[in-house]
Image (cartoon, helix red, strand yellow):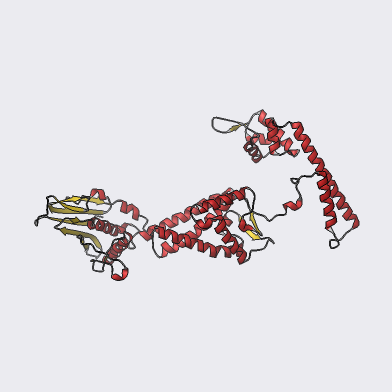
Length: 482
């Protein structure tokens, strides 16, 4: 039979049946498709479990009886004694209620010590055990014991703060660097944003975007809102004790300890005198979390593309092309910049960069059409000695990227796709040739005597020594074909 049929015949909810399976009290067979198949024996087992749980036997005791580790008669005898003690306790509480009612004692005149001492003395004499529930033992500060919901709520908040900083860092300043220094800076700023923003949100609304997404709410013991000081202590405690300041490996240890405390039903160290509640655990909250995280990630990718891609697109003027060249040169950490006349210059002394390199550099000439828009570029390099010629292929990539920006669009969404069309492996600077990369035709004309070209970057003499008549010259032409 199916689980639905089992629910109807036993009156137990599906969650109960799954729980008993998890505890090993019920082991249904599996079909070939993986679905459970319940037998009449499983139905009988569930009815037994329902009866014994109704009588108050614990899951552990029922499991021991099933395994034959404890006879059912002894388990029932022990439970009967427990019930007798509970009945005696309830009878005594009933007597105290009647006595107080008959004496018509007002609340202000009530003296609890006498009655409490008598009740506790009789409970101890009757052998009532600590596991017997007492109403006052349930009067505890509320806390949420859902470790994964709590984790993903804080993860969402951290993602949101990182996104806000990324929007400023990448979207406004157009800085696309993702090095170690930038990563550390992003981490520090995100932590500072959390320390500043989260206490304000908690004291004003009792929640944060991540907590609201998962139905979590924080309040004072009185039920009112937290003060800014209380909310600040909460946030600092969560970052320090719960996240380990996000220090690698330390955060894993702190997260594991926090998870264990949640699983054990213990409050976290930073939750003293604070109510932490949850509205519900509906599945749509998890779906919304995934959707919003994906949207933030996609937005950051778009911002990063916008920051990395050249700033000018469409039909390029001479000034637009030069701006694109300098943008790509800075991204590639190329040591020179192009001035407004299209000539390469070394960084000024004020830039704090010292460059000494006597290898030949490619000379670049910008070609424009009748309307003044850039139609292509020409790069030329000449040398008559053994040397490094790697500047030429570097400039070719920079020029290609600057020209291909015409196809990128306003946010550079196609920048990587366009750059991927550039196939450096097809370019052999030891001989003349041509190739089509996207909408750009690249042609290179090579003349050389007495030199071999290694890896497109190094000239070596074919003889023992270079002759005065030996030379190498290469002219590269890049032209739009569409």
